[in-house]
Length: 101
Image (tube, rainbow, N blue to C red):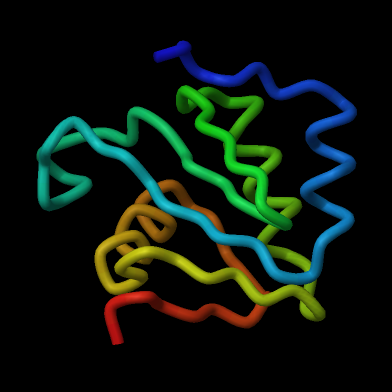
């Protein structure tokens, strides 16, 4: 198994070029942002998937993803992940979907 992906300009442009993106936060096994922290972000689009360790750079990239009103972001358990978005101060205008409906 390989380690986390590196967020390159090419990967960023590829993901931002898609209007449907799958997203999932990984945390340090905590159920609330008050008690834990985000450790990574999974991103998938067009039969490609990536895992990025959480960093300021990845946060800025996520902000670009969720601030496209034409994009659909499909989260795995958005009810859980939305708490972490709010705790990180990330606002969104993209359409949000959830796999746990």
